[in-house]
Image (cartoon, rainbow over all chains, first blue to last red; front, top):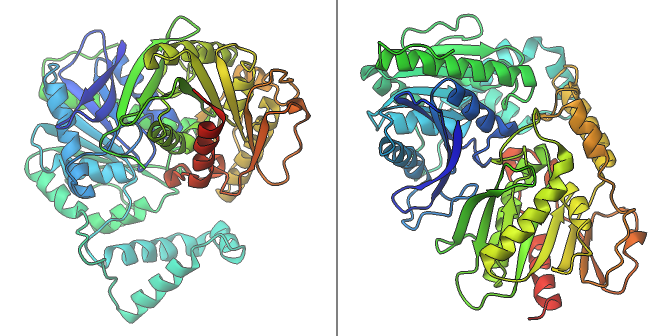
Length: 288
Length: 258
């Protein structure tokens, strides 16, 4: 295994580290920033994941979006969502030049949205792992429904949630807005001029071209409710879905802070990549 | 703060362990370059990822003022080689030494300024007597033992909020931490290590911090950090303490003459 810098992108401003296996499969995994956390990932999980993938024969690139971590800003004034969907493709370009031909995008939180968005526009990406995507929906009711479901199906029956309510550890504004808007049938309104990504549309586009999508969701995180609203089912009761894989990690938090949750997440991603490589190269043999 | 014209040069350089540390040398892009390079000694653990953006912006601001700077990851941290399973925290001071040499060579200067935040300040203090260290910034310095106590308190607080048991034996706030690392981090003693050389020192501290009797020499400046404690903020917030950063840069400009 080797780890080396990869400076790439249309403007040569993207800074990444490529972890390359001794014997390389055709599949490379690309790790996207989780919000503003730089490319090593929360709790250094991207580094550990990259090294684990490399021992199984997969290349893995972790890089910083423009203006995040060590990558300087782009000089072309690209809007944030355009940048987030274009720069993973710039990473695909760079890795294609190094001999990789199949690509899996992985993102936590906003990185999950970027992964879905970029994959829906780039047919070279054959797999997406979206981990705890936040609500950035254009559907004005999605966020209200997400929080309504969480309050009604989870918080209402949780003694800890009630304790948080009386001890001030609750976003009261969101709670009241959700209840008011839901009961009054009012719609949330998106800020004008800020078109947000539509995860539902991305999933449809990816299913159409047979790109595999897997959601990794933390049981303690609101993303279970959010993705449930998008997929139109209560994932806490039934996580099976015809066009995407869903894995829920019971007790895990948004950033997988506990060590055993991290290991479970790494295991799920490595298994996905292995299945992906077999699909792309049916004659490939498993690494030990 | 950040501009499209930044000159950032990421690279791996040999660490004290014979493996590699990752670093980013940032050079000034306009005006004249000052003959000092700032070597930024970051905090460790989960504090590192919480402070990364702030230190990145510190580099950008130093560059605007004409100072090159090197940010780097200690062995077993960030993008550097190794991890909790095969790296000893006792090697981190050695990493600072190689970082100083790498920074001077990369920036083509002979003198360095050490800027240490939290445990990074404690480690930086060890090099105050080096001839090529012209000045030191001790930014909310903390000893290893005190930092571990604070981490355990935070871990317990967060675990309680999630209704689960803390697991400090394997990780703290998502950062892997072994028993060996704990013991070695505890060995990093802070302010009791006397600074005797008469170099410019900037001590940045929080309200209520104890006076530092180890810095009884004429050139010590102090600055009260009234902003949020960035190492305690959620990593997603990535807070940049602009007033403190401006103070560090202004202090360096006024205290370090060509």
